[in-house]
Length: 269
Image (cartoon, rainbow, N blue to C red; front, side, top):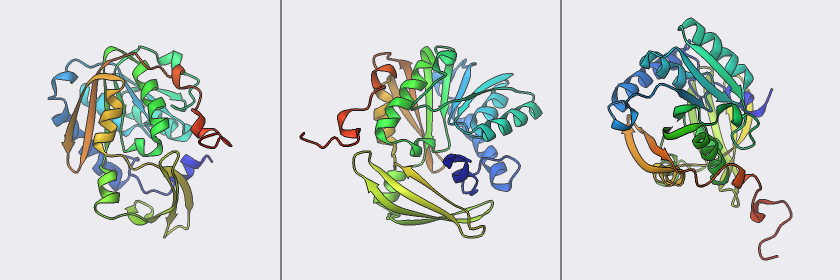
């Protein structure tokens, strides 16, 4: 089991539509599509790819809402994608699954320029440091046609951490019981916190590197790859929209880490 599979197996995030919390998230997404698709940039979008899709909650509900017959899902978790394919079949939607890592991709050429709408939902961007977020956005932008649109959903974790004061210990109640989240350390080069997760009911545990994004930061990063940016708040979260691929910074340009991130390379030497 990979670390991501272990993390999501704790049940702290609603991604299974057959659970109570998952069903509530499906309803929330349906309300979001009703509101979001009044935006003029989203008219006529028919070719959808959902990145960091997990079990496909965003991509499949959107495809169903739009009346599409097919959607593409990209994730590193094969088990989650297998579930998504079965769920899509039950909903009458063909799900194309692509197992790939946005920061070190192997299958970008299969997707390049094929889509007019790309998604990253479920606060997935928290898995990416700023350095890795650049690579992820480069990958996503290169999957799009020139007039393509990107949608990035997230909560304002920056505000929650540094204003509301959730700095060290947090608790989430999921389908498998309460999950305790503890920040154990900080990587100043990457800006990420080493975070420990523990399910108080099952005893399952996991660790992950987390970056606490806010809408201003996400929007600025999206702007580096898209000609225009907008933000829509929705029920305690936000969706950043980017339209029109700049095509100036490619994933190939970012393939080698800068000196500051290389092991053993001290600043000033």
